[in-house]
Image (cartoon, rainbow over all chains, first blue to last red; front, side):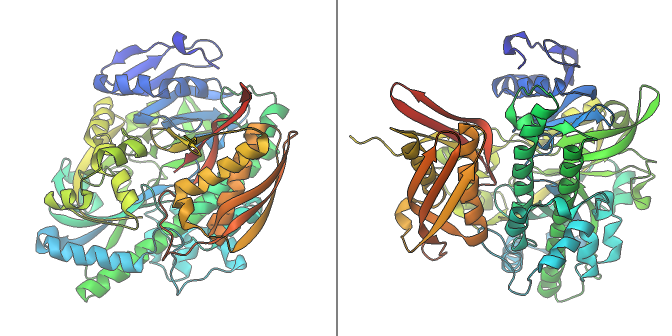
Length: 485
Length: 140
């Protein structure tokens, strides 16, 4: 373990803070943050976690954290670290329990002002009827057999499209085309399958949501045009992941990798950082299982957006094509990926962990969909349910500094317990309505725990990545109606 | 006054529990009851069915995490909620238990907290001053 009192923060500029290497650290840490965020970062031990990650074998470049950094299991949330394929590691603690938790944004031809709060209320209520959320709920018209589950794990969103959930044109607008090719369903345990089988096509709880919003401000009109965004436009965000299946895969592999860390003589500063060499049998098994769980999440978001389309069709009495309801993009923010990056003048294959961080590739990169390649990859940053969300675009600077990575959201400031305490005697639903936002949750507890003041202001987070140049703001969105799981 | 069954451990993103007991069986039993109480409220659960659980690990803290993970699995897959536990803990990290309770009934049970996972972070099972204390944090 790195001695806490020996960690220092060195100012590089107003947006970059270095943790110089000390003790068992193999490299420096680098935190992207504004000055006023530093106190909170120091307080919740996230700095120690950045230093812990820097101790892992085969790390390439800095152990990084994005400005939405906060304490996580193993890696901090907001953590980014790349490891060599030869002597580096892969760790479930660098991905998180909710494998391929992510967000997708859908756009429409509709103008938000055509719908008042009443209509938004009806629309959210209709979404609630059609999209299962909360404990134990699922669509009566959808059952998954074991053989079909294997195909989901292998093919992800491609499976969903082949079953009629959305169109083939959606696939090119999903990170990795909605399918991790190295997924290996055989590595997914019976328990994980059991937990996942009834949960495909469900939103889940916690911070997961479907949100109807409006484009409030455009910062970069040329890029917004390529993304199909315009001021006043009605949009839909979907935020969910791999549900119990992903959680179980993470849990299973923490157990397995606790043993292999010993086997390979890796000193662990924290049990949640257990890992194995990327190229070892255990490392490859984890990557195969993680890929399969990621595909489950891609299929999940694809199914939910299909039900969003059906709900809109029913509600407006016209086809989703005429409503212009199309997928802008789908990003992952809890993943480890094998990617090629230029590093110190050399092309290198690396295992890039992004935990509570988003891939943000620049214009021209072949992984950016052809439709967006001239401007760069869309980056979707949801905020809390009462304020705003952002659409950003990847930059060359991110390619050079952060292995093409940026922030993922707001990050909590209040614990769930504190949120419940501070909401005592108040009605979160009413307060939100006063702001012109209709919210509906599967449980009252979730709404309270997820209230806006429990989160950092996402605009502070976005300001840092924008000023540091690792992504560029394109548009700001404001929520109008929120369905919370 | 009788001590509360458990204490809540507050944590920025998540929530945890701390329990005490005179022996390992009691502390593992209380951890399970706290797990259910925080999730749904023990009073709301009735005894109608039971489930057998057997877990093995390589250390006591891992045994605690895996015990509660097993209960989470039973809840996630079968909706099973416990109210009472009979348990035998072998100090070299093996546990067998019968959990008495019933499947989730949305009309009677209000699920407050839904756990994603039981984590190893700050998980501990310690013996001090004649009492066992166990602590664990849930990823929400």
